[in-house]
Image (tube, rainbow, N blue to C red):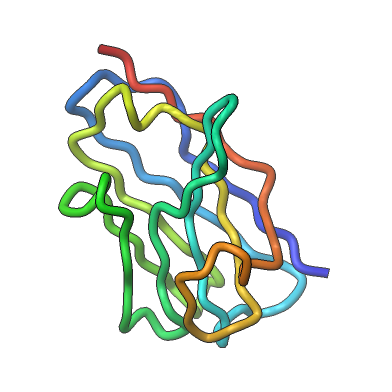
Length: 123
């Protein structure tokens, strides 16, 4: 059974930065694409960033391009999301997810999910 645990969320002022971490346990995910999603009340979960199995390929939602960076450390079974130049529209619960595929940008291809970490950006 795969467990994903997010950390690093919190309250930050607009223009600030946060780094989210996702620790995977239960099995190694070195062959799996990983993603960060976010969700606000009343809205569908949004795919923010994805990274392929070896970290060589990434993709981002237009709203975060140039501000967010996804990375992974397969030796540690960790995935990260560096978030810079945060604005209030980035306020959401952020989720880490793992796909069964080595690379995908399809939201429906993510199988394992963390419990989420709250990010709040004040203006």
